[in-house]
Image (cartoon, rainbow, N blue to C red; front, side, top):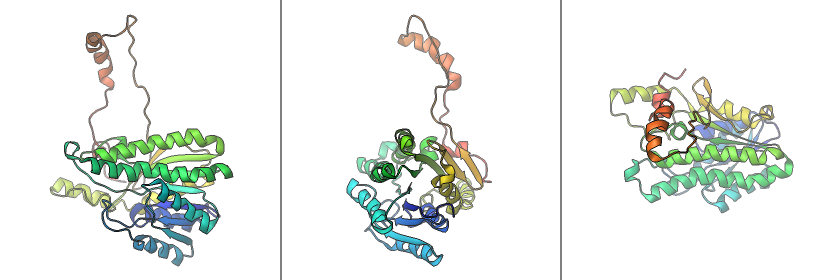
Length: 303
């Protein structure tokens, strides 16, 4: 019961990874705010409490405590209400898991401004709004833990996901900034790059034998595989861990590198465009990052 007496907010907890994290946290003693707006994968349709109610029922049947919030993460006012739900029902908040997300995949040259803005609002702005709404409570109690969901689509890259990739990479930077700014208050912030079959991956094309084979591999990675890492990072046992990016892929745990300089060149007389072409680029080229995608990097079967 490593989360006993803790209060956790899990956004996007009406299904998939978020549901499994909420259930796992409740099983470890946390009181859980199950937040889910209840719309479709792309954010369409009317809001519904049904998905969140299903998660709450599972938690309560196992003897845990949970309350449902159907507020959106995508505006400041509604995100604030999510945190207020925790305070009103449980008197405090100790953990924020920023998991809520939608997809509106489209090749960059065909993506509309609305498709861009909507995805960024939910993933990146939503992570900021909920985190910021909890921050004053964390500061007052001199403790708290953020667990944010990023993605290999942002950390590495993928086709047709400029909106999603940019938001997910932004979340990694947001997490690092929170870790730096709030360390003095005993507050931690880490990211998880989850790998799992869920409705977020259900839209992956399966038109060729190779694509179908890949999907079968992904299906083996159930959402529950990501929950133990989230529980650990939210617990006091991870008190010294902050500003990191982890991955959970089947039975594999991954620590991701973060951007650092990889090579330097110097020219005492300074640089001109032609000297950059003639001297700098040849010296730097061996360290250029390849134009690869997440499936190129994670090319082996999940273990």
